[in-house]
Length: 215
View (cartoon, rainbow, N blue to C red):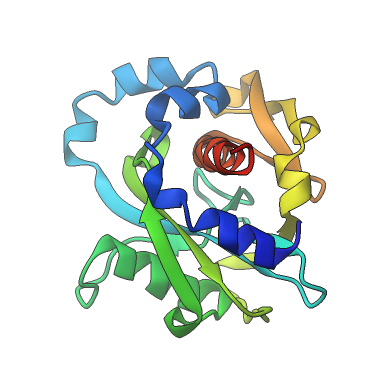
């Protein structure tokens, strides 16, 4: 989809009601309900975080979405695909500011290039006990990226057309704690499986974009 057309359509984003948890559950892993119950008390002290879903034009004018492949490390989100983002710092005036700062630090896109359109439905991540505030934004010019070597393995530039294609919604096998294998709903984007909280946020975004485009 041409970015100029997308930019015009997405201007209606703030007129929509957030699809919320109901939409997110379409991409929730089957064990999420069990984890939510298990972390019921711990959730009361969940750590805040913020991420940015950023759309922008390619050099040929097509609409892209940036995702990141995280480095492999000893942690629950090792080598997973997600949005740029992270924990707030003392200098952050808001969670939106956190999302913008982390985007700059992780992929080298400055806040001056980004227009944040709205905040989306917060998502709780039981294994790491984070409550994530997602934001959706656009950049109006093609982007180049400088990766934070300690955090980011690669950038995935996902075509909006591929993202909106229902065939990108798949079922995938993942290995969770105690080496138990589960089948989970996921997106297959740029040959990478995107599941869990990121997929839950993505399905809300997809739902809203589809609402706008079908008007």
